[in-house]
Image (cartoon, rainbow, N blue to C red; front, side):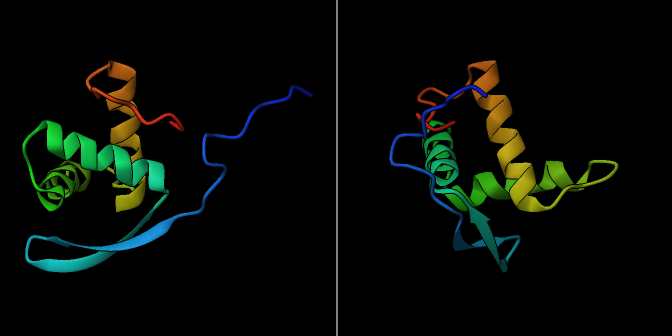
Length: 93
């Protein structure tokens, strides 16, 4: 078995937040690192956080087999980091 170090700040479970998408409130549970990355991605694009989440939701809904919104957000963020389009990827991702 290999040893790994926990992320900076330790392992932290999801935090639930309410957001408004297309005029409807919904709750999303994400780990703090994902919230941080979403906020940074929204800031980089000069968008409100809700607008970025809504745009990702539109793309998610168009998928053949749409995942839940939290999974779509995590997947989108991971692709952003992997593509190098995220200017400051969080340490824990």
